[in-house]
View 1 (cartoon, rainbow, N blue to C red):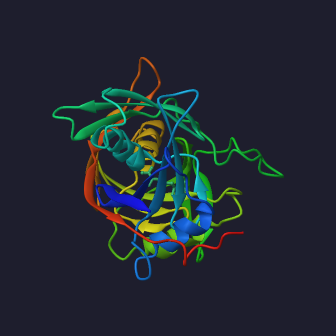
View 2 (cartoon, rainbow, N blue to C red):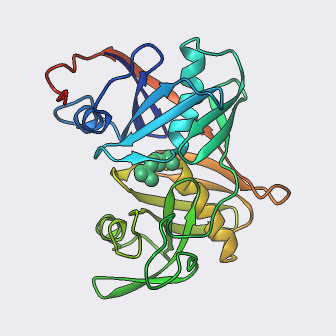
Length: 282
Ligand SMILES: N[C@@H](CCC[C@H](N)C(=O)O)C(=O)O
């Protein structure tokens, strides 16, 4: 099976062209191929597919095999992938995802992509949370190891729980993120962002991703964090988010209510892998 490896600020994906022949058992394939010791190694597996509603369809699986509705960094990589591989000449693309149709545009010299994530939703889950309402989303208290954190929960296609911190010094954010991902407040699980605001147009973000753990960047997460910053009056509607793997420009447009994310997408290598022996065929 031919594949290529792409990353958006170090958030890396294995891309497979599903136009000719789509692989089977995708959950298991994702888990096997994304393994950094026994596989190719990646945060996720992305399938490039035809669509009846948009230019293309993107299917994405996390490294633990779970399917995600959407992925910001993968969308940027996807937009460049279809160009590099001669599947389109269009600079403006529509991409069908489980979170709806996403619009993306190659900008500058074509190495950067601006993705329109649409209107963010202020909620913790698509699934109603029994006993309370999933609409409770700002200043949600979450207690981990006897410490209570205030979270702002925003969906930008996938669920995010944003926690503002004064500093990362001494903060075991990986361990806290791991526990919040599976907290009962989030019946679909959640991505968790820790944000230190530098000023109204700049912040530092560390992320624990649902289904993938620590990653170097998360596009929908940076977008959700800007929305959370605006809603809690910590930031303006336009900001640079400094991630472990680099910077993203995020804007929550006043006129449309849409969130726009701009950043790079890079192909790191191409390869061929035999999957017959590693994937069950049931
Ligand atoms: N890295 C992504 C988000 C990928 C999906 C996420 N792990 C989930 O399951 O919700 C991004 O750049 O947005």
